[in-house]
Amino acid sequence: MEVNKMPILLFLLLATLTTLALGQGTRVGFYRTTCPRVESIVRSAVQSGVRSNPRAGPGLLRMFFHDCFVNGCDASILIDGSSTEKTAVPNIPIRGFEVIDAAKTQLEAACPGVVSCADILALAARDSVVLSGGTSWGVPTGRRDGLVSQASDTANLPAFNDPISVQIRKFADKGLNTQDLVTLVGGHTIGTAACAVFSYRLYNFNNTNGPDPDINQAFLPQLRALCPNGGDGSRRVGLDTGSVNSFDNSYYANLRNGRGVLESDAKLWSDPTTQRFVQRFLGVRGLPGMRFDVEFGRSMVKMGNTDLKVGSQGEIRRVCTATN
Image (cartoon, rainbow, N blue to C red; front, side, top):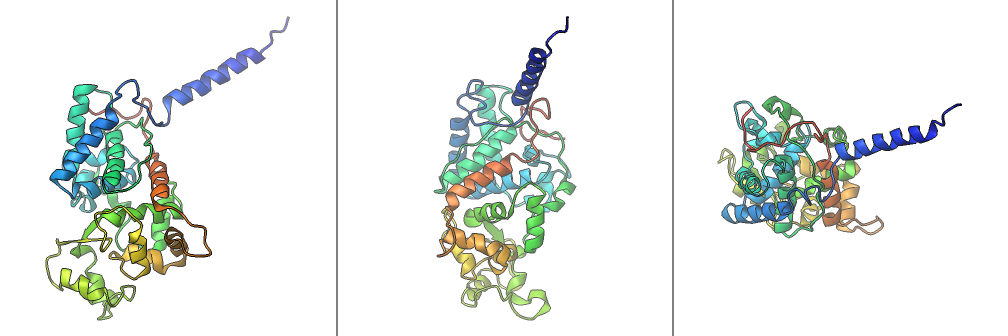
């Protein structure tokens, strides 16, 4: 007598799907039973850290961004040691590492060996936005920490002088589209930059003996006063003039008005490929509007699921800055 194989096949299919669901991916509330206080502990550490060092807020956001763009969101940017990501030129100015360490110390006391450094960083980035007046969003968790951190891997991070075509390609390589690009770069609303990375735009741009034509002529004296020719290249300047400490869409208004500080930011307005998204955030008539605060959360979740290590991959680091 022939045995009906359908129930067996159905059982095997369900078992496979269950294994996939349990072993892969992130979800909001991943630590609900294993470490229920994780979000409040991280939030408290961020609040305390930003009170002590205001640069830690935007630093945590930038830290998460730079982590996700190098081998996925795996906390490899936190690892100490020679020639690690933390020592790479784009990451040296970042502040806020002590905030992650403080949160990890408290979490190890509350639920040892449970919460990954990668998830702490994802939550801290969200909390730094909220602390600056931005809108909160649910952060999916369940990441595991990477085992490798190399400074050379930061070569493909988006750069301050990337043309739009390169910016789009770098974001596309991470599964992010042009709207995500314009949205996530909007995080510069609470960021600063050293004079060294943009002062070339102010004096002899592309060997023209003049400034970058994308800079509003009325804005130029203000930037030159902050960053005089041959002056202190380490001096930091707000990327969202007039609103550097508030997470809002005024950054896009500054781009429209020729007040983009970084060359890569200014090109978001001068290039029609990205300009239409800037216009949508500004509510330009005739285009469907977008709310920056809402879209930012969505794009952060999308970026936060880049090249994840989950299930049996990676590790749960007991010390976030453990050396290679």
